[in-house]
Amino acid sequence: MFLCHLVEDGIVKCEHYWPDAPRTTRLYGDISVTLVRTTSFANYDVRRFRVCAANSYDDDAAEHVVTQYQFTAWPDHGVPRHPLALLDFHAKVSAGKMNLYRDVSPPGSFATVAVRRFHVSPSRRLAH
Image 1 (cartoon, one colour):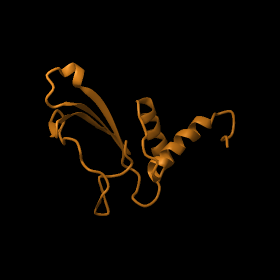
Image 2: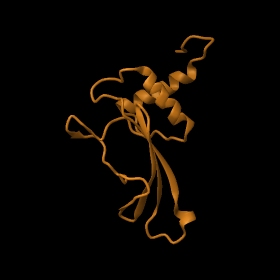
Image 3: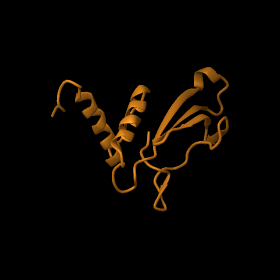
Image 4: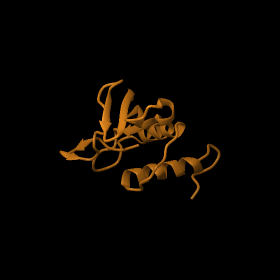
């Protein structure tokens, strides 16, 4: 998961480490990455990859399916214009399996949304 564009204000924020076209494969050392599909929404993209050891002869044992979520509505300096965009993205990511390894500004904010949504219910106020 990442919460930025690849390049913002002329500065590379994230490396483009996947193939551009569906059903194409790129090699990264001894790792093979195949883009299965990209689904674009108004505020985020979801990509599905097949990742495996490039020199593996046993396809079933070596292959992993990886889903990447990219939130594209987070401005470089600031916060998303509409909170519903972030809430929609959070719901999409929460429906899949996701691990959040870093706690820097946008991902930290994303984690905060997750915690706050957990504590909110229709019958009570936001828990502190």
